[in-house]
Image (cartoon, rainbow, N blue to C red; front, top):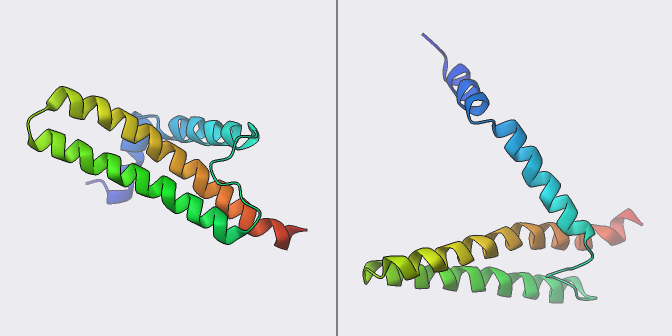
Length: 108
């Protein structure tokens, strides 16, 4: 009988999760180095407020998706859910930008 860890390992290998994670990290690295920032403010508090607005925007999109789905507007819900997923992707980059901005004074 396989242990839980062996089963997890098999599933990770079968789905090529190591390569997928590497691609995800590479994309985030490229986005961070592109010079475009979703959270750019001289004060960390202002940058955090910008981050919260990006997060609130994605949450509002998801609420709209759910409402459309419940009204059986499936095609529109699907289209908007894709937009929501794109916004969620931006959140992970924005979070990294915020962390780097907060850590910058400590690094110098």
